Length: 287
Ligand code: C2E
Ligand code: MG
Ligand code: MG
Ligand code: MG
Image (cartoon, rainbow, N blue to C red; front, side, top):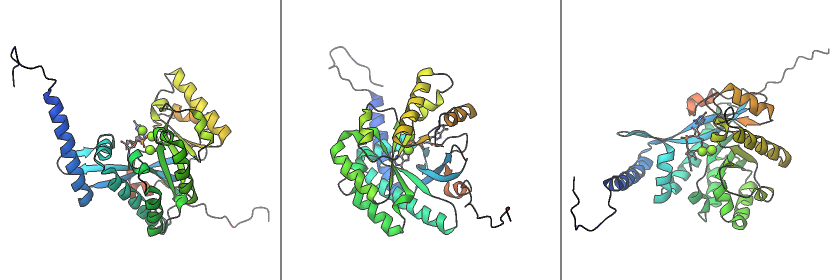
């Protein structure tokens, strides 16, 4: 360890800074390798219909299991992927993998109707984003209606005019659009009526506070009332307790995700969560 001496120039050097930068660089190069070696995988979390209990939708969540470092959570690697530009490659892989999975599930007769995919700002703002999405859907033969793209408020608000045309092009592919972590941004609500958004996802920090925090409860009620009037679907994130679900159901929330029903699961296990297709009952009780 170095000791500072009187007369030494004052620096803001801090050994933690160096190690943070080194970790970041290391993760970046490891991520590059991981993308090539297939160390990333996707987990799927059911989105449960809050009134019927049916599961026909999932959210895809990226997982990185590193041979040496173990599990690295997306909140750690997504920002690095964004800073390094690797997010483009990762995002392409995620969408392709989701399309492949949808094909598999459909061929197995699984009642999968939609998979939500997270999109980061850098991905969305690439000039060829829409074209890439269209090509991927076409390549896998997946109709756009099977895909929901989850965007954040900051993406949507950053250049509303430019975004509208991009969002409309995505809608033309049949894709539905969700705002993730709704309520955490600083955006004006008026954009909601101008943009072709289908779904609002209530950020889990509001949901977790339902029992203890009156303002959070009020925010959820307001979001649900607004969504109802403007005809958005609402998905509540992070539902862990029966009381939270009961509240959301009472207020007309459409879908929920959370550990109460299921954690995000590998595809094989997630497949068992889908509600079977409704079979037609041919017997007619009136005759
Ligand atoms: P998000 O899209 O808002 O995803 C919700 C997060 O909440 C997920 O964390 C999920 O595992 C977690 N979660 C679900 N239910 C519960 C619950 O009941 N309690 C609690 N405490 N947490 C719950 P995860 O998988 O760690 O992902 C974190 C974030 O990383 C995501 O937030 C998303 O912003 C980002 N992310 C994940 N996969 C991708 C991806 O493929 N692409 C991009 N661009 N971002 C991704
Ligand atoms: Mg999400
Ligand atoms: Mg979210
Ligand atoms: Mg989140």
